[in-house]
Image (cartoon, rainbow, N blue to C red; front, side, top):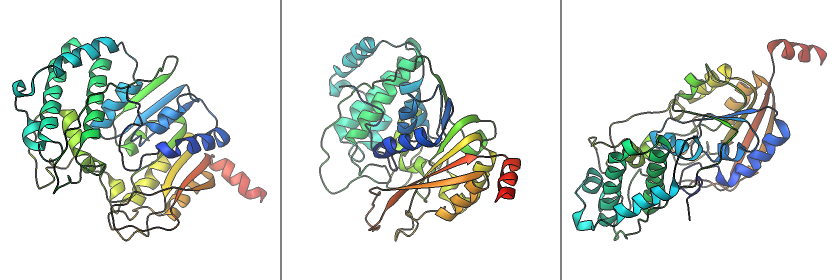
Length: 347
């Protein structure tokens, strides 16, 4: 069975909330264009494909950028040819597969030795075959490898550390992804700083789900980033992380200011913001860098704000306890300064 876009482990994934978010957008927003400016898994953008003619996805991570291209980007591809090529590669005996960077660095750590050898071998074969593949096919094979490797990873769902103290099972099995039919749609895929993209973006509805705590996604998913980029970067520490890259201001103390700047520069009709109430967490890494009041104040500077709440399970690394954890959706209908002034004069 082919992999769907939501078939991955990802901190903060909105897969279980996408239906609720979609209902709110349908009820409160109008327009033909939609941007998911911190797209993450891409699940919300995928949900909105049916509703909007133009969809923009943006994320800083190299791995997410390739995944978006694989699932959303138009382009020719032959799934049967890709399947045949992958089957041919997988018929290679493991003792004939060369030692690779993935095997040497991650074998016996993030993956079993057997799985790391196969993953590293497939990554090199995909790269070797790139001149013979369309861009869509290259991204599909690479995205399939990322999803399949993530399923076999010896982790709790991210790569801040690997599980120690017990044997690692051989579980890797390559699966193809199932791309979306985007015919008749305009798809734009970006890998930019959201605040810079905001300065040139024009879209009816912008969905905003930034990181809110100190967990840097480029560090949480560094193994998938390294798999995507290829090469042999120098790795550091017990977690085998490369040099820091693509670090987000939204995971630092400057987050509230970055959020205000983003909201101020977006040219759109509706702002839809996701937020969860984790800022009272006992864990410093889980504690929000942007508080609810920061969001409300920034959005109210652009128009009238509605707040919707829903109970939702939270990510728990062991130090966080909540008895009333909620996910919030803020929806602001953007008005001009003149409209806001007139509305104030009528009160």
